[in-house]
Image 1 (cartoon, helix red, strand yellow):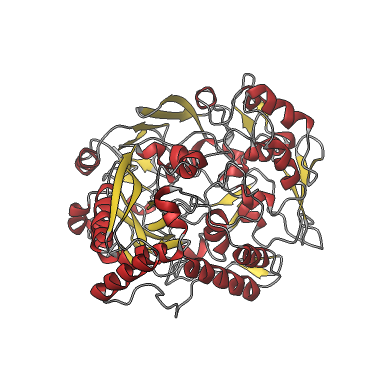
Image 2 (spheres, one colour):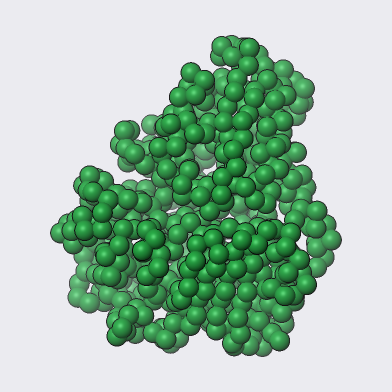
Amino acid sequence: MTARTGMKLVIGVAAVAVVAACSSGGGSGGTEGGEPQRGGTLNFVGSSDVTSLDTAFSYYTLNYVLSRGYTRQMVSYKSTNDPDKAGDIVADMATEVPTKGNGGISEDGKTYTFTIKKGVKWNTDPERQVTAEDFERGIKRLCNPAFPSGALSYYTTTIQGMKKFCDGFSKVKTDAKAIADYVTSNDISGIKPQGERKLSVSLINPTPDFLNIMAEYFATPAPKEYLQYVPNSREFNQNVLSNGPYMVTKYSPNKEIELERNPAWDADTDDIRPAYVDKIHVQEGVEQQSAYQQVYSGTADMMWADPPPTAKLPSLYNDDRLELTQDGTFNKYVVFNEVSPNENKATSNPKVREAIALAVDKDAIIQVYGGPKIAEPACQIMPSSSEAHIDDFECLYQTGDRDADLEKAKELLDEAGYGDGLTLKMIYRNEGNHVEVAQVLQQSLKDAGITLKTQPVPADDFYASYLQNPDTARRGVWDLTAPGWIPDWYGINGRTYLQPLFYSENISKDDSSWGTNYGFYNSDKVNKLIDTATTAETQEEAVSAFRDAQKQVVEDLGVVPVMWQKTPQLHSKSVHGFQGFPNSLGDITSLWVSE
């Protein structure tokens, strides 16, 4: 692994492993299935839609799958099945990865300089070079007032002037003209274009994982045409431009998405996307069982959105069509809506949250996903694949004796003033295993004396329209729910769990949006520990602070950790070249199909 600004990014080999490698991929980029073939169509089938095609907003696994094909960043990751290489930063649009040795990082570690390769172009008419100004515009769009990014804190806590710019942006009207006017007339002091293809980014503090932040899909440049549309709007999603090997040629929400080769893409400028297939087609609205049957029989290539049905997994464990990637997925966890007015603000009461934590039947939820071959129970937030995992962490709210846990839960409810019962609301995705998880939680809480009213919502609306829409939380549309989380990178990645989900220092307490801090968790102590970790000069200091931060979140019952899951993906026998990192569902630019 490479050392950056005094911190070595390390990945535990035993902890992050591809436990079932497809014979067509096998970690060798597909050569075990023969030499990669160019051409053909890669066909996905599944139930739900992406949340958006706008990388400034989208924070969802399915979006990541497609974004790899039509976006590029300054730096990125090569696709791999080797966990030792999963976090290695490589140049993408940039001519090289900035280091102190090549002059790309200043001696104080606070200024990064990037030069964009000549020939990286937009698929405009005529084709146009991607510029430093496009990159600056892309970062500015992250805090637009209509649909701000769920990962905004990655940037506001690191880039000089970003928070000030975003504070002003939050007061702007949410129409396209007002947004465009603000973007074009206001600057982020830390981002300075230096001609067409060169720019510098100045940081508040030395930030050891800043290149990881630059590798995120959020850090995608934005062409000037994007200022014609409200971010994440229907109009935007029908006018997406591309600087990658594929371009979006069709998007019918909840029906289908189609990507075709981008004639503006120059393969000589792209060392990480071989782009074997000519077309990628996603057929949506296909239920899990039907999607499974199509892929298993070979009439479709890969499952989209849903994993194989749990009942089918045992028969697939020795089948080279099933990929299992242990990628640090924190799925499931229970999050509490701490601003809900329901039941006299019950979920803001620590005793109520502790009662729920004691009542959750983790083993039953693990069985929903396929048992211990697929998942293991979690008592902390970060799995063993993270350097901030705590090996001897004590399970604070479960004793292993379910009867005793339920009895204690009832006592806590009585102490909290709910001895006569408590009724709470839960929203859940109306597809796949999420339905049965809701049923398990409903029964688990009933055993402790809590009535859980469950409400299904469309899967593609779950995050965008509910969890990232703070109005639904403040109105008490939900009291608890069970989302999942995948780390944005590997190694020293405590930031990727803790900052998006629990950091609140840079958020106005009456602000309308808390991003992916869905339950409005707020702790000054956790904020300070995250700040310490993300500006630490040594690996040891960062790991220690991240560990203390996650301990505090668990003690506060910000969430109930339920399980860590290996991510299953099923493809047909004609698909080759599967790579489990950086996207456990597969890199569409590295996959190829045979006759």
